[in-house]
Amino acid sequence: MAKAEPRRRVLFIEDESALLQSYERAFGTRYEAAFAATGAEALRLFAERPPDLAVLDLRLPDTDGIDLLRRLRALQPDLPVIITSAYVSLEPQLRVLDLPHHGYFVKPFDLSELAARIDGVL
Image 1: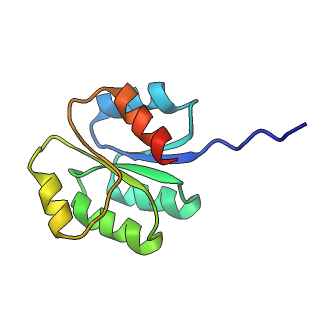
Image 2: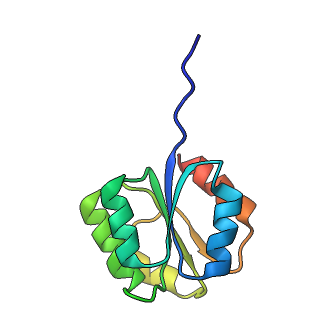
């Protein structure tokens, strides 16, 4: 009998409480999910159990999301990261700064589209 494949670990980093709750409802049982509302909390959770993928909001109360993306990449260079933002104009900036990512979602977005992207990357 084949062993069930372990659920993939996804770290959701989002300071907007309503969206974070939506993530928990939509993804809490689908993945081995961890949820952080600040950059400091994200780094702590990352250190405790590195994720297979991160979903990162670029606007956080305690840090710049681009700086946090750099820090996550320094810890795990091949970590897939999906960016979320309320700003359409930031994606070109990420390319210029040579910060690769696996998707860029402008809020508001459909959670099923995010799920499809996560599943496509993992």
